[in-house]
Image 1 (tube, rainbow, N blue to C red):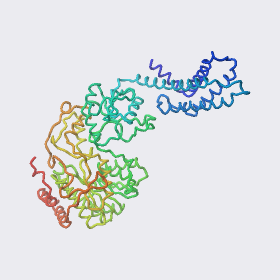
Image 2: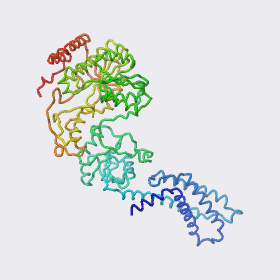
Image 3: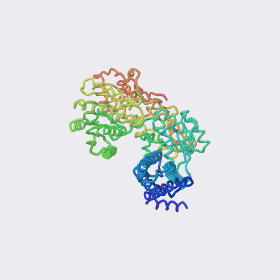
Image 4: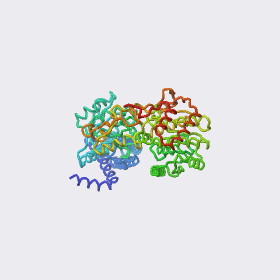
Length: 632
């Protein structure tokens, strides 16, 4: 039966406009003659044949033309909302006024015997407007009901978080676009004014903290978070509460504004996507399309490590900010090729791209690149960063991180680059591993070079980037995909996390406000237990921690801290114009001593003596405690 009805509708919709006009013609005719039928006992109809005939012609023509002008025959009434019904009422009002004016002017002696009775005006207009609105409303309800009944599988029971304007629009949108798959049962909102109220058939049953018991009570299978304007802290709380249930978690993307009815005029705006770990941690994802920074506009920007996680995002945002020329430098050709192709697709000919395969350890090659491209700004992200691997290969860490940075700093200074931004790490603070010690030496190098250079050298220090190459999140996801166990080094280990887009956006901002010699520290938010992160990821994947996916504790790896620091005590901390960026007071670095020590480091590279290398790093970085000296 459903197939027959669907086939009938398919054929009928080909003649939608003529059929609508014909239907309105019949309703207008019925409304007009009904108004005269009501008067049949009060008047002698033969005396009014002339008024009935001409009045009918004017009535039909005026109402049909008014509806046509108002676009009543162009709207898709299966998706009609308040706007369409408002237009219909306005068309009725306009047609009524024109009809009254025309008939009052023309229907008077000697043109006709008498004017139209007031009852004809009142009843015919009321019936015409009411019947056409009713038939359209009934059609929309019927199509919506048919769409729901045609569902090929049982619909998932949905709880919507958020009952404001956005939440209400989302509930209506789900019914319209996803009615075959989802059935919104209840909503929750922390605003007490919404509690107990209804959005259509959906009742606002409680607040966010009530979600677990409401899920159990109503058999909810999916939770849809519809609070795109919530702060990061609020999103983290909501997502954490939702993650305690066994429900599938979905969200409305932040970039859509559902408070505007215009965004619900077609199905493209009603988009649902998975909740990510970024949502659980309350971190912001920056939309590069919204970026505007006059500081980079029209500049030639050089990025080292351009194929890596941080470097590639630096390239994206530099291009989005309006850089005229982007020079991308990396020793790894695969990552470099990928970001090159992505930027060509995103920005086309609006930016000139140069992909340069080169090693920052080769000072001569770097000098050639600077001579060829003459960059205004340099973002130095090239570095070895994997802590355990660098413990096993300290000489490579020193060669790439320390001498790569020294080469870049010297070349940038010699070519009078306007500004040089070093991407540093929280592991440079009181380091307990070779990687952290080398990054602290890098900071000291750029501060020292800044003291005698026209180039403004700064460093930006931040913690872990969510989902970066070699980070814990991709590793956890892979372990979950294999059925576990998920391996956590220590139950109490904590880390600061930030999305790559958020971190790089703040790096760009810090680079803009730099004067030279500063170490900028990014606000990483609240630290997160790695164990909590593992449990969140397991639940997001649809499993229960410990029972369905086991968690093992493997012990801290060489050079690994239980917690990370972002600032050394002696640096102090100052505020900036951006509440997410702080600046550390530069520590007094003696350039002569530093460069003499770095020269000794170069001599030790040839000798291959790890103990002497670590000993010298301890002299250069007083806070450095070698991993082998730490008793865990």
